[in-house]
Length: 445
Image (cartoon, rainbow, N blue to C red; front, top):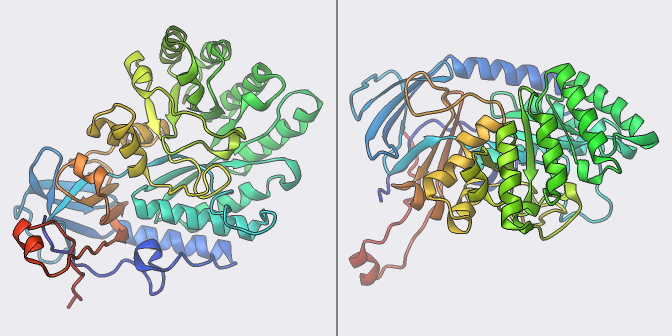
């Protein structure tokens, strides 16, 4: 394993390196409109630049140079075949270059609340700070797009959604953050307010309609309301469900089959507890209706208000033809107080415990996750979006095992970087074995 480190101008302002630099993200300044305008200007300027990635290893074993420009991959050639001294360059010797992961199931409004004392604050400034910090942590892991489920209603109304939308605007150019409006109830007398608020949430900018039918007194009525509103506004649907009721899944499949741009459900851990023949039948129904599933290998999220659910039966679902993505779920909140929000950890768990091969596991957090989120496909080929992740290692299996140093590229520029340092004591054994290690970053010119 090469000890060389990529050399480039730092993409971070002083004190803003986040996880890799030993400091947390800064608190968002108060003027959201000014921040959004500045972010948009910076993003536009960044997309006009050209970047050359040198000596990257691809999954097929080739070592290549990759030229990026205009937010896309312009060219891929053998190492040294794309000379251009005027370009900004990043040395990726010793790194595996992959399509970037995406995070299809986050909870930015509740993230990072597990360690707090007293009641959790849902004031706009506090939720915006949490959502921003969570998105940046996930970006540092490699996720250049995040879908955040945000609760609306109850005493907090639409405040948390507005806060996450503000975070979205301030993060433009760093990561793509989209929001799912998650009402609690939509049926009966109590549900009328929830339905009105859900309509307002879509008007505010929530691009996906969500919720948890399992918690409504009338799950079928909840589904009808969500699907009707989604069809009216042309929104995708992303629902929380345990998936332990085969009758309810059958009704969902029957009702969702005609909706475009589609329906996603998750985490569906309850499917693993059903008899095998029943689970197979449910999977066939979901596949026929085009319903996609987002599993959470790292653990449940707090939305279902349960604990200890098993991961969805990924192999069974995939064999039936269901498109399965993997998300991270809770990021240090009530659902998982030690959640990391790391898509590579989700892929690691699918490969180590879920029965998937390493490339299949990685695809579940990259290509499949992007498809679930309605994002364009990414391949390391000319013409595709420049949404990339470079991880120190030679093969995907090794990357999922020891994914320490990472370089994240969004819209054609480096937006996050984590550099690990591994050292061994000065011993003859370490030298003789030529143990892999990370080198220290040398100061640039």
